[in-house]
Image (cartoon, rainbow, N blue to C red; front, side):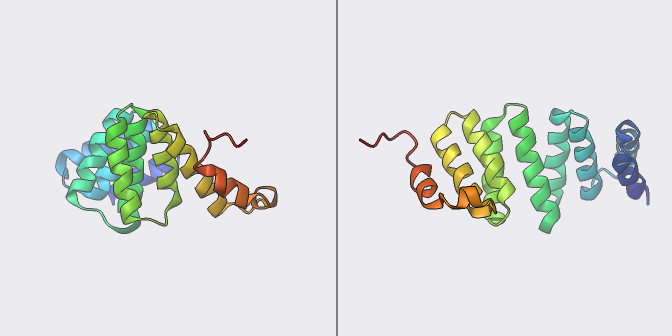
Length: 159
C-alpha cells in the first residue's frame, strides 16, 4: 500500500516527497527489492545517480526477474556511465545484453559506454547496426547494404 503511494508521488512529479517516503519505508522494510528499485528510480530522476546506484545494486542482489530485472540492469548500467564508472557500466550492460538480447536499448547504452572508453569504432558499428535493424525510414533503408558494409570499416579509405 505505501509502495503504491511512492509510485503515485513519483508519477505526479513529486520526487522529493516520493524520496522521503521511500527512504522512511526502507527503514522498516530494507529487504524489499521492489521498494529499493523505486527508490533507485526516484534518485535517478532527481539527478542523484550515485545514490541511485546503491539502491539498484541492492534491489538486484535481492532478486528481480523478467522486465523488472531488465529495466534495473539498464538503469544501473546507465547510471554507472553517467557518473563515469565506465567499466562497471560495460559489465552491467553486457549482462543485460546476454540476458535480454532482443532489448535494443542495452546496445545503445553499451555503445555510448564504448565511446566513453575510447572504442569509437565498435560504438559506431553497434549504433549503425541497431539503426539498420530497427528503422522504418526509407531514406536509410535504401542504403542499407552500403551502411552495413561501412559499419565496421569507418576508418578505411577505398581508392
